[in-house]
Image 1 (spheres, rainbow, N blue to C red):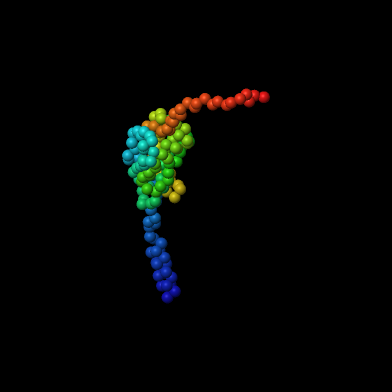
Image 2: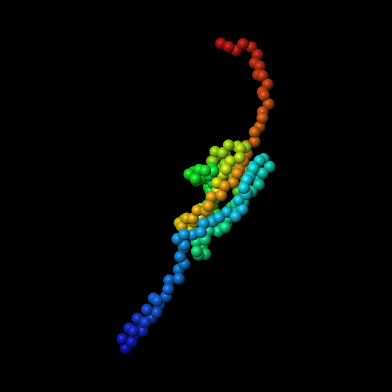
Length: 166
């Protein structure tokens, strides 16, 4: 009887332990995100500062259904992302930013010259749980940042009465 009970236990153990591991695996070489609607050029001016620009991309493919985090970066053209500026983080496949915010980052963080067209490169870094990084191909856009130049009138001469010299 003990042998029969031992044999039944062993058979149950073997039957349970023979299941295949069905845990999905993240791809070692994920397909990176790719821009789907980056305009070739943008001119920022006083009328467009409050408008939004939306960056859209195709989702990165990690081989399984999982939450993917995206980081949208930009840098000066030809700088090879040596000092990128982060425009935003999202788990969606699009990101909107006002042209006013973009304009500020272009001038203050990238140091682009106002009112002069410059090449700006964009890329998307995708990650799953902070790891498994995939970097999109770089896309370039010609952007003209905006700074309003206010011409002040020449001040009138300042006259002070008396001889105030010591």
